[in-house]
Image (cartoon, rainbow, N blue to C red):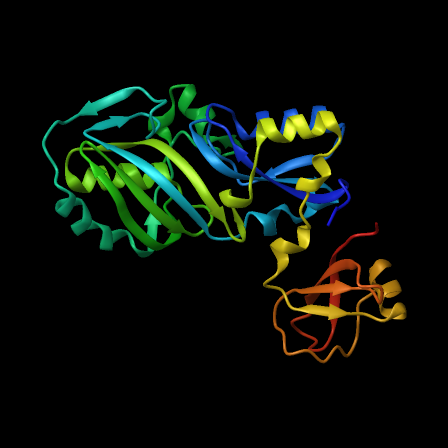
Length: 300
């Protein structure tokens, strides 16, 4: 099913060496769609699922990126770097041997809810500045990094080839795999950094369904690229659906609150008009049960 480029998602398999912004800039330039954003940054050394939001779908980016992620991470033991990955300068080395059994023995410490300190070379803002900007100014030592609560649902070693190993990570959004690699190395006593990363899934979006960037560009040149567009509603599947009649649809489009919707739902709703067209996200009014207000309305 074809979707309008003015309200759609693209699941791109980001190539190695490109920034997420590079990919956005290419697609924006070649499709001539002005409003495009990405949902969930990947570093240049990372590949895999990069979700682009097109047109009005940019207003849904928080929901697109808000799903759990699955990564395959290449961890290199014995070398620590400034950025916690292969792009940084080496700051410590240790060639002590580590066995697979030793590494697997510490994994339970990282499963479940954990407090994680983000890398200083990250886009998190502190005092109005991004951390990597502070680090590049040589002031990284002056910043006190705040631990963040993240969840590691599953963590397993897929392949062992000392001094590197392949780690599968199923985690909450906002988890820094670079920090995870660094922390694993610290606990093992030899240090480590992230040598490679592939995001294989972001919620319902997987690499199996992602389009290679060069294939997409060729399709854009042939004007057949619309086949790769996805419905933004895929990212909202966990929200219950409600179908509105014509007066209700008109009210929602005008920002009017709806009364007496008897629905056993406590979170957000996906609202559709009587023609089955996705219309809005509705939010319950906590103090007034049964009343819902339009949170985001899509007049297309």
